[in-house]
Image (cartoon, rainbow, N blue to C red; front, side, top):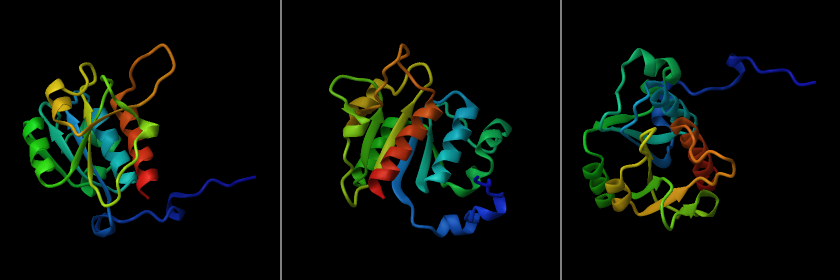
Length: 176
């Protein structure tokens, strides 16, 4: 039989230790996300995988907000974040800094998630799009890669927070 661990046994980082910890070379870009719960969920997942930073773009709401906090559970304090009004301008800035930009989207000539091999010593920005419209075409056009999560059922999309969880875990495992 296995005993569930108590929260006190999980050896969680304090916020100050999180801030000092070596981060996974991943940046999350939320491109016009409507749902405050999705935003909070992405913060929480980003905390779990020591993500470098989150950019909240366009109509994406920013902390503090009770509906973000409800799912973020305090991770808006641990994970660095910044608001950027225009996703395309942000992407140009990041690319000029040597960051490789990847849109997570269904498009022509995508790379399937399981087939993408991150390069060593490279920081990646992963763009997740609007719940209905996905990543803007103009953002896809400016991306270095478009990566698709394979799906085999009758539906053709995941919830944005589920997509983020799948992709961040995959990249975290490949990078670490």
